[in-house]
Every structure is written in structure tokens, then in C-alpha cells.
Image 1 (cartoon, rainbow, N blue to C red):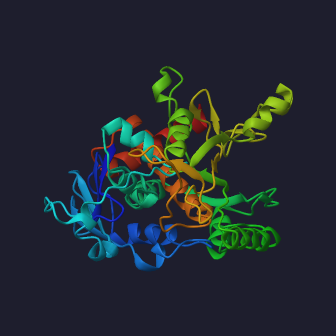
Image 2: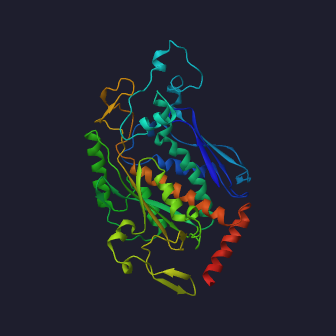
Image 3: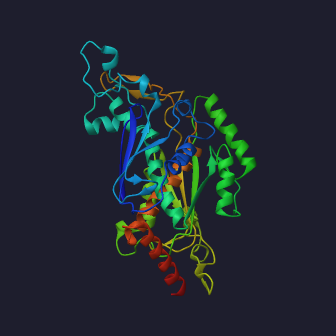
Length: 389
């Protein structure tokens, strides 16, 4: 299963085409729109979220509420396009349209501007910044929502929350259930389970905005119900933790990823890192602890998958850093594009959906999946096999 996205931040629309979904899977636009709406929430978001009210149009691959087995196309219109029709239009422009043709030659620190311009030979860096914008995560969430729907129909639940923003850490030792975790996270303006830390996080975001600065943080995604043995120990490129790590790191501004106790494992003896194996007649094989985050040897263990990602502060600052003009080679204070002071709560939703997509792909790769009813049957048979092994 795979998808490809197309579109620019201020272009007419964002598009993704998904290939490899089984036929006969229930899927509605509302399943996707719910995730798109979640992505736009969060304390610290900028004015763009007030302009764009993202909803998806299904362009093909679904009939009467079920997938056909053919590629599914998803389209999200950019409402702000009407203000950018000349600047971002596809047609050639006249030589005298200087305002439209005026090039962006000043790269912003922390962005893809300079590297992308050098890579593709763009003297106008709007060609880079329009595509490298986190706006593209809109259709990545749309694709992830499809993956998340598939997982839910197979009894696999995915949720996310925020552990840290701007140095403020949530005190979360455990959670009642994944459903309760999702409910509390959804009600919080910063997707935090700790009400005390929530208020401190919101203040940190407000202070950063007042100071013309930005702050980052840490998000956590938890997945329950994943069958045992999904992934591979045989080939490096089929290891499930490697695929999940790559997915998290592909999100704009993410600079680190860990599973279970993660980097803390470097400071503990093996006896405090690895998870003892248990067995009982009702559940089959389980683990006494889940320090490795539901993954061993590149495969799922059947325990909850726990993955965290580190998001750096957004590099667009209202207190700009210095850079160099690529035409004049003169120093300047970086330009300011409309931006958020903190996008960590929204990034948790993005992380949740990219994780869901990778897990859905891994299941499609491992089990017969031309038809959804056969996929469900095979998953259930595998669960019973693993329980009795």
C-alpha cells in the first residue's frame, strides 16, 4: 500500500492518491474529515487555521461507502487560493508583471529554502517553501485517516497526546484505557493529560508568542491491538520499528524518535530494560512490562506500541534570525511568513496518523488483502494461532 501527495501551500488544492487498499472496506468522507479537523486544533496555532476549514472530496475509488480495490483519490481545496491565483498560478506571466515575478532570494534559517533551491536550481525560493510547508501534512493526515480506519475495523486502536512543550513536562505515569486517553487528549487545548501541566504549557506558548519566538515539544503515540509478529527480523528494510521511525522523522520539524523507554535504555542495566515474557490461557503470550514499546527484533510483540517524537520549535520567527541573500550575498534579517508559535498539539495528530498509515501498510504487506473480509478473517486466524502457539 502506498500514496503520493501533490500540491503547494497556497496552490489551488492538495491531493493524495492511495493505492493498495482492499476492496469492500467501509470508508466515508466523514472518517477523514474528523482527522483533518483534529489537525487544525491546538493552542498556539496561527491565522491560517481560521482561513482553511479542511474537508476532503473523494475523487475516486469508493462507491456507496465501500472501497473498490482501485486507487482512492482524496482532494482538499485551499480556501486561501483565491488570494494567490496570480502569484501561484500555473500559466506563464507577462514580463511586466514585476510584482508577481519578484523572486524570493532570501532563505530563512531552519527551513528547506536554501537547500531546496540549490538541489533543484530555483532562483525563486517560493518554489521551495510552498511545497516544503507543513501544509502538506493535511493530505498526509487524510491518507493516515484511511489507514486508521482500516486498523479500527481490525480492532487496532491508535491515540496520541503531548508529553512536553517548551520544557514543561506532563506527569503521566499510566492511563486508564486508550479510549479514555484519547478522550482527555481531545478535550485539552494542548492535548495534554495532565491538567496542571496543560495550563503551564499554554502559558509557555503565550509567552513565546509575545516574545516573537516559538517552542517545540514531545508527542507520544500509543497503539493497542496490533497482532504479534508484524514486521520482520529477516530484512533491515522490513523492520517495523525502522518504518515507524522513518515515518515520524518525515514529519516537518521532527528531529528525534524513540520507542518505549527509548534513550533512557542507555542509562539502565539490561535487567531494567528488557520485558519478561508471560503466558496465560486466556491471553497467550504477554510481557510483564513494556519498556521496549511493543517492538522486539523489528516486529510487534502484541503489547501496546509506544512511539515518541521530538518536534523542534517552528523556524519562522517574528523575531527573525539572520541569513544571506542568494543574489547579493548580503546579510539580512529573515523574512516572516504567517506562522504558529507552537504546533506541537497539531503535530501529535499528524504523528498519530503517520503511525497508523505505516501499521496499516505493514498489515497489508503481511496478510492477504485484496478483499477486506478475507483480511479480517486472516487477522483473526493469526491472533488465534499466536495465542495457542
